[in-house]
Image (cartoon, rainbow, N blue to C red):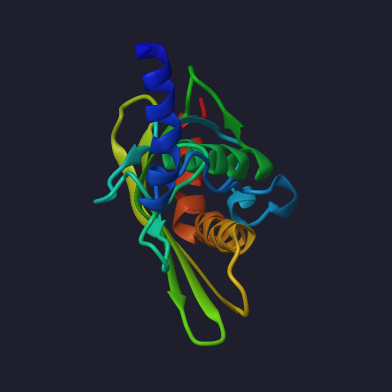
Length: 202
């Protein structure tokens, strides 16, 4: 009887958890490799880059937003830090540099400051605003001295007639891509990588 009672409790709890906005899956946000193009970052000579584990500095790390109807959590299918680390590695590689774990020339440390989706439901349409802010520090691979500290911001806005998880994901994909584009087109980052190459040349 105790086993049957437990089964009944589990079955009854399912709808209740759904009503409270608890989700079992999330948005598959990712940085599409097809959308990465060589940019100013590629102007620096090839460097060996170690990417440190990405930190999460968001105030609320459990969600990226709230559903407008019931306040339920909007979450990602993977940790936000994993999504950003993957995007950083892809951007570095596509621009001619190597991502390594040893014999590095520079160390790139990233931290997620914002990874947020705001959803505002109107009478006839819904507005989505995605915002991704990533803080990046570049350090000398041998001495550990800091070479550069920057923040890269990506914002995406979309207004559509009906809401869907696909629209949410697309908005966050674009916001992430724009933050990476901000990084890849930063002349100071490219200059810092170039200076390190000169310093390490025998």
